[in-house]
Amino acid sequence: MKNQNNLNIITKNPKPPQTSNMDPEIWSKLPPEILENILSFLPLKTFMSLRSTCKGFWPLIFSPSFISKHSPSSSPFSSFLLLSHPQFRTHFPLYDCNLQTWRNISLSFSDSLHSLPPSFTTTLVSSGGLFCLTDSLSCSLLVCNLLAKSKRKIQYPNFNLHIEHLTFVSTPKGYFIFILSSESSSSNAYLYESNSNSKVESWRKFNGFDPILSDNPHQQGVYFKGGLYFATPEPFSVVYFDLGNGKWERPACDLPNELTFVRLVSMKDDDGDDCKKLFLIGGVGSNGISRSVKLWEMNEEGSNWVEIQSLPDLMCRKFVSVCYHNYEHVYCFWHEGMICICCYTWPEILYYLVSRRTWHWLPRCSSLALKCSCGFKWFSFVPNLYAQV
Image (tube, rainbow, N blue to C red):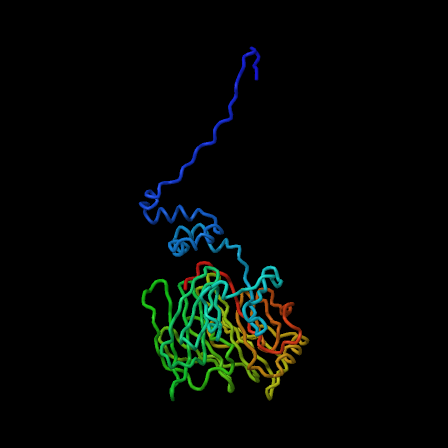
């Protein structure tokens, strides 16, 4: 190449800057908080794929640096309704509530938790991003976070325990497990609390409640204002177990008249720390036959049930025909602004959108066989990478 003075000018491509690997000795001498801060800059997907290369990566996802840079508030994860059915023995279909459609992917406990024995599917309950499974063969419970691929095995309070009722509730600080069991001539309650602020985690034993709390093994207790609320079979009533003092109490308000079945649901705060509303779903009729299905809310003073909605007539007829008036198959739960009303013998969910005050049916899963008569168990699944087991 020549310039205006006819001088030859030779241009050379600049050499790329040389990079060298950091001396491992320097890495090993870095203070833990600085190392955590450096690693937290890795993309979340890259970091998750590297966890299998070193055990030290596992606790890092709970470090302050990592959590601050990958805040759950900006999480791309959807919330799901998970379906368990005998037709799906190894996986669970997922309904994406954000996209309002069934996903082509399904959830598998055996894939997420590689060492999970098949007997750990005797009973399954969920809360937030955690699942709790029971295994009567090993007399233990398994609490797991499928997204973080973490788990904890918890032994029963005693080896002669026969679980009649299991409630599992996750909180921002941990979770608690509540068990009702009959042993010889007595009924007992057991409470296990896992709290990030406490290093002591063990079972506590309390007096049970007699008579039996529920005729429905699918309905969990409802967490509301520091207590677990339950609806009893006929004659219908509401009782609660105070988690603070371990005593059974009854609310001051009476139930509505002419109820044919009763279910309870609580609405969580945005931060998930407590539940700010308690709802009652019940059939209204006589001789065990429901003429209508209504929704009530407990007032702020806890002195009265206030009717807020009635199920539209056509939807009520379908729901009643689905149940065949066998309401022991009906169970309810809260999921991301929805009150879900399910039947063990029907593949659809009836749900109420609290913000819009409207009722809807969830579409049937297309992968289900047309002739499926029972065994439909639904769960709320809100993936949470930071839910600790």
